[in-house]
Length: 279
Image (cartoon, rainbow, N blue to C red; front, side, top):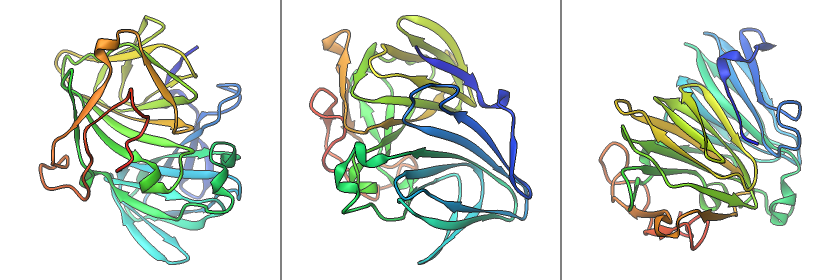
């Protein structure tokens, strides 16, 4: 069954001086989950040492504030526009002068979803999602921006995307076969459905759907809703209750800022594959 809760209801625990962790998805909360999810909060002038287990894949998405991540090859400045990919065995330090908050996700034993990982692990990478191409839904007003793909991270073990629902937008009922996934509501509010049962969602909510559970969402009438969602593994099949509503995504030729994007993606349907091959 689906699991839904707001991150603010999860107690914080200290990780380092001025750094706190909220354990959002755990084996205790969702038995059998393949995705571990934390929300980390950094006070001003604090830092934390990341150490990814050698058999795990990890990544984080900045939610607010600014930070710097230092690693063996140098350092990168980060803002709310960035998603950071951390390969197996990664070690580095994240520091924030003014304070920051981020979502940190990890897939333990990730090679079970992509056997090529052991011989050809992905590399550290920082992606500015505001420079990635925006896709438009053929059937409704939704927009999609891919965050984690085989081309961006070099593995099919995970997949991630950002979905934008203009006010009043409703998606079609569907389920996924071969993957579990979670959503994190970045802003706005609306209604989520699990096996046709509705429940309200708002900023800061985590919604977890197990493999094969039917679901869809609807944005509130007067407010845009934006969420990030991640799948493990990334290669799965989507089944639609109404085949006439199979989700087809069309290129806009623009990024979220209305400028030419860093790359191009052709139009595609989720009936053909989980992730397009050119992204």
